[in-house]
Image 1 (cartoon, helix red, strand yellow):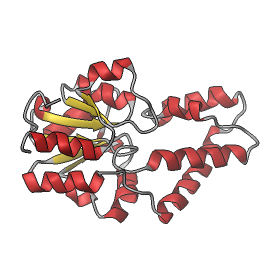
Image 2: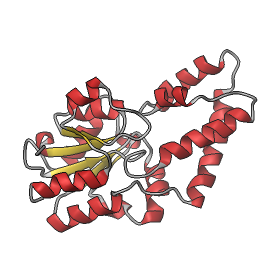
Image 3: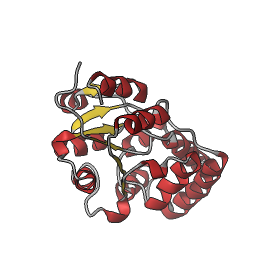
Image 4: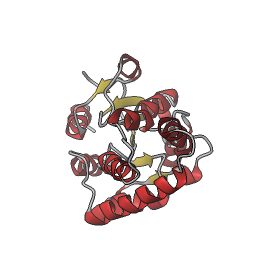
Length: 222
């Protein structure tokens, strides 16, 4: 399947798409929950992927019940995540290769993430790839988060490219919804969430990994 239009820029999500942070987050949540004698099922975590912190906290409060100290639990998760990042969180398969390809063909690229700028530098900084992006649209500069299209529209504006000419790469359902609402050609590269029929409708392709996206871009000559 070929791309519907020539890609003039690429907009990436970060967590679960460029770097394997979602697995680390779940492991941290599991540890913090076990320390309190609680269970943290994977299915509950999957419901939180791609949501804002506030929306995720609501899910956790409902799951653990009245009286659960969400803030203390979240603080312990933050400490576990600091340990995980210090130990090194891996880039996703194909992340370096797609950046190399974009460099070779001269396509601009941005990150549009619900994470903070600090988190971007913590997760991607050790891999030396932050400077390979021309714009970083983090939650610090967003009024509306995904699934609102604002993060992707801001990314397109920062790159000076029409959203319709941008390829958006996402792993979460809310991310796909945001990118599609922005009018971008959207590819889902699933991580923790399986593609649904809605995702297949919104995406031009469901890719196995970023290597497959490189092939898709190479087929158009850029």
